[in-house]
Length: 292
View 1: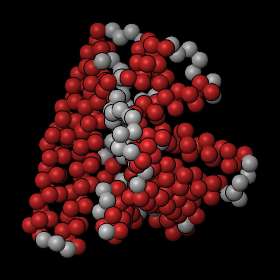
View 2 (view 1 turned 30 degrees about the vertical axis):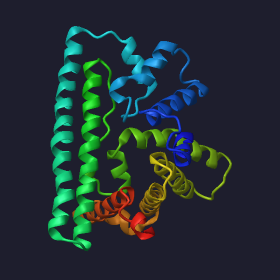
View 3 (view 1 turned 90 degrees about the vertical axis):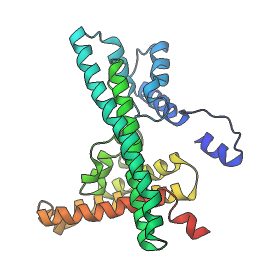
View 4 (view 1 turned 45 degrees about the vertical axis):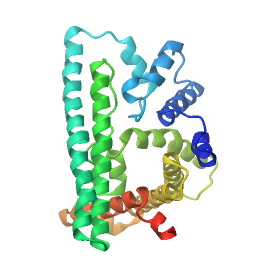
């Protein structure tokens, strides 16, 4: 976070590629050492965990205990070949996503709106293309990183799992940038919830969870950068998650119809509209133009 703030002050603020992901991993180790979950990690294992090159620049965010277990567990020839072939498959899928899917989405984002012309339709098409580009580019990189990790004998967590089939915003975040959302859940949301419940800061668990979602996603937005676009993006998703959680816990109509096909289709459509509007916020298509 200091780096994000420093860059606002001066573009020459010292930093390096991958600093955000190393910070996540280092923080995780510190917290789990404090909790007594890690007690025998060597210096070389720690440095290897921080600097593991497939995930160094853009994740996925690994967990140290899984990484160390993989380092310490000798693989038989057959077990290694199984990981290698599985890794090769994921690497090919990732390369297709990143170099074909992302390129096509980028072409769609650049040229189709220009053909349609200025206006709401052109804006909608550009936002749609931008959201698809984000997915194919980042999911492609993540799958390639997973493939390289497996080829080196290390299980790298899957980062995307068909996010566009999600029927609510909570399910979307269970499928989108999974390593980030689960990291925030474990080390921010759960810790805040335990703190708030133990001190009875709120009257109900639902309220506690809703506040936790707001804190969680605001931090997520600011992690991407200290700008108004990212801040509003984080607040927006915090409100969506809090609203979804409240609805699922308290709305009788939801409980009665949540398994009905028509309700699930409607919920999916509403979720996708909300998700792609979030992409518009993230990409600077909403706040920045309004501010001129």
